Image 1: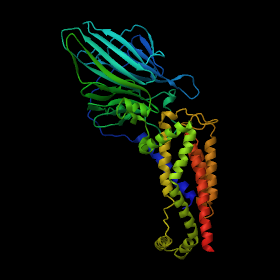
Image 2: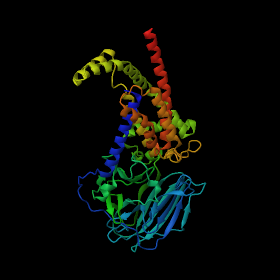
Image 3: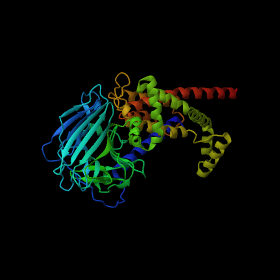
Image 4: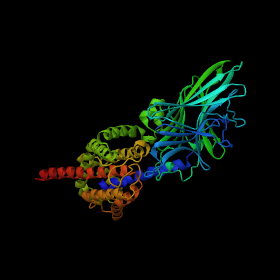
Length: 537
């Protein structure tokens, strides 16, 4: 039950989990076929010359195609494309090798958007550039289309200062003598296979955040919907009064939140050129002759900021992907945020949260080392039992159990801190790669991004050295098997290699954890040695 064995166990559990995660992600598919539904509409790129306008507030820059009024490009002005880049991050894009768009329109019996022949209305606007001024809190951008019958359709984009949510408002004036019927739709479509140049989605490790579709409904507050299902035509078909649909990836999200009364249909479809779409279709809207009707929806294009997203729609903040350990990652992130508000540095906050975690788990750590010390004192007796009953393994087990019971030792006592440490370790990993607040967050010196690996691999090497010291202070001398002893000696090297690609914030956590472990270990073992000396006197 030596500390080295615990490291080996920890490594085995972690490697096993990572292998399972990678295998599950690659090979495991839900083969249950949903009832096949026909996509509500297919709207591919309009093959005409594009007419576009540019809309900007202080955090968003949007390019709107006047054919249909879709948002075909969106840049996040506060976030950089890469760590040292001067270019803003482009979230939505319309390129030859990658499509990511937020579409909206009016379909149905009298809707101007016609999926059958891929026709869209050509809106007009008063100018090509709309920008929120410093003294403004709201920017309204109206674009207008008039049908052959004289029906006026005005689509307005409403942006607010420092906010990533956009209100889309349709103001329809029915100048005819008939009742108009139409449905509003909001759709997000994205190319499934991404080009390598889109490094916003790149990952360098088996544990990855979710990329794909998601939705919320009256029956399901949050449900992921994998691209695998969409490409296999296992399409979503949900009727709900409340909810939203979204496309997710690491740190950022695009989501439509319907604002209409009545029921919506949430759907997915697999479009041409390997494009996945998720969207909603509203209940039929009726507009009386010579009257107006206003239809609204809300669109989120931006970072997955939990505090802001939960104000936009119920459960939208759950799009922050903390994996299956979300119940640990969420409170850890809240604690880390509170510490950062005090300390002003995410790296120092990670150090401080490590002290807190080690303080909480100290009783278990102490029990571990007490168990280790007691086991060492029993080694001569255990050796004697093994030699005495060398030809009877059942008798050896029986005698050892009796010895443990007599000495009041739990042989599994050294394992409990490992099982506590691993979930904390993994939840911190998910938190670091899932919280946009930590993206490009600097620490000190050469660490400019705590969510990414150490560019010079200095922290993983320091971590390996701390593991080496833990091994030396706990000593390998009681391990008689040479193979096992060699494996234990290689563990610091194996872990160092393993941690080279971990986020530097997580490696920092593990270094501080090891340093505290060394101090705790020396303190507990010296205390036990004093007790043993006094007892022997």
